Image 1 (spheres, rainbow, N blue to C red):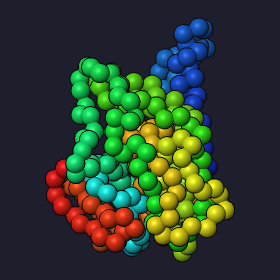
Image 2 (cartoon, helix red, strand yellow):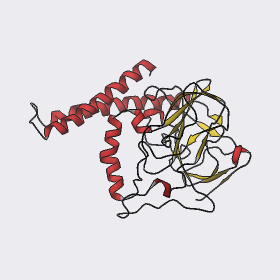
Image 3 (spheres, rainbow, N blue to C red):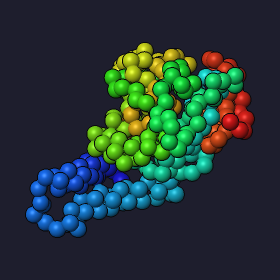
Image 4 (spheres, one colour):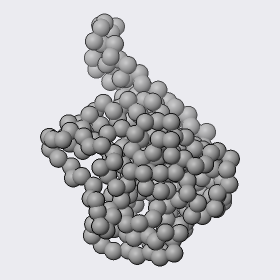
Length: 284
C-alpha cells in the first residue's frame, strides 16, 4: 500500500474510533437520532480499515520480507525479552505504528533487585523506582541522526494488578489511542540510521534525554533513560526499526542485535558496557 494511502487510512481509522467513543459519551446525556446498532458503524468501519492494512502488511512479508538490519544493542547489563518477533510476527499482535518486529525488554540484574511480580489485587500499583529498568541508560544502536526526541510526558505508576490491567485496557488504552501515536509510545526517540531504516526507543523517562532533533550521534552514545511513559504497564524499553519516521505510514523492519540476535520471550541476555562483551542465555 503506497505511503499516501496508508496515511489516509490511518487518519480515517483514527477518526472513526473517535466518532464511535464520542457517541458513547454523548448517549449518557441525550438520545441520539438513530438506533443503537447504527452507532456501531464507525467501529465496524475502523475494524475493516485495520483488517485491510494488516492484510497488505502480511502480503508484503510473505512476498518480499525485508532483510534484518544488524545494529548494536540499545542497553547494557542483564535484561530479558517480553514480546518478541522471535516468537511471532507481528510481535505485539498488530502491524499498527510499524510494530511488526518490535520487542519489549525489561531489566533483570544478576544480583537484583528483581522487578515486582504481577498480583491479583494488592498492591494496585507499584512505584517506578521499584523496577530496575527505570532510569537504565539507553544507547544509540548505530551512528545516526536524531529526527525526533521528546520527554515531556509523565511516567505513571505500574499497571501490575488486575484492577490496573483492566484500567489500562479499558480506559487508558482507549484514551491514548484516541490521543494519537505519541500518546501511545510516550516519550520517545527516533534515529535515522540511513538506508531507509529508523530506530525507535519508546516509553523513555520524562526529562531524561541528552539529545534533540538534528543531533548527530555515534553508536554507543548515551541518549536517555528507560521510563514508564505512554501505553506501558511497567518500566521497560520498547524498541523497533521502521522504514520511515512517521508511525502512521511507516512499516516495520526486522532487526538483529549484534552478538545477541533477537532474544525470544523469557530469554535473558547480558551486554557489557560499550558493547564489548555479550552473552545470550535462556531463563530469567
